[in-house]
Length: 423
Image (cartoon, rainbow, N blue to C red; front, side):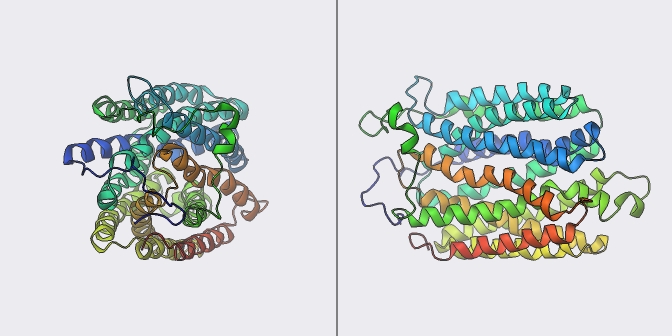
């Protein structure tokens, strides 16, 4: 079923089913991308911010995240649109995937060497430029190659990237590996090893000239605009994803500090670091995330219903965030993370399948997904601003922070319901 506002059949829309080998390679590449991203923002940047200014670590982290997210928003949008128009003999997505992966690895060196807020900010900006070049092209392969009937199943496998990336950040980077160099080297190697097989085996021909979006630089920026009145389903999907992702960013981005300053983890468990507590929580969430993501994605294919699963997942996330706002005992926090993992897994799996079905144009899939990705990157700017406001002068009011996150997640789930072009 096509999105409301799309009046003609998109001949570029894929109809041939993808095989298991493609799904496996795509999944591994997606996991590698998340491993390059999640440990950095979940563990390494909070630790780097604390080493630069231990007193104002939340402020340093927020400043870096804000500027990095602004760059990420622009980079993803432009890279997706440019890859749509790429006519290289190496393909239209592959050159950007490879260049982005190499640039991401190079940016780690800048971040690792940073010893001031400005240097850290420069490193994160370079990371966001490179990573979003990679990620925009990688995500565009879903509408490029996967037919609607398989989108839920493939999206379920792709949704493994988020929980496994988070677990890698907490368990490997936060728990097992101690040296800074070893941590960065590990995520760099994982990224390159995971991306290479998919990038070099991808069937990635440019669109035929008659179906390719025009390359008119004078009107290029104007073409990035998607009228929400003409494409209301796309607009609702964007608003929903934006609010839910702000909530998730608030929850994950400040969880290490939550364990340190609200739960006082090192007092609860003498001799352990807060990063080890985060590793345990993330492992619990990952098990729930993977299970619910696979079940939700496949059921949404079988039942041909996306909205019920995506909205229910967002409300489940809100329930978990309310639990965190109460600053309960450690066992309840673990239970809350189990609930959080269930909601996140189902939401990531089903929502991307829903989004890919309401794109205004198949031939502009990279650009349109870049617009959708603003709902991923802008939260990285808004969430730190909200955190600075609601954490208060002492930066410890996690009750308010997680109540705001819960409200946003619930509102994002409800915003899905009026979508008409997808059941």
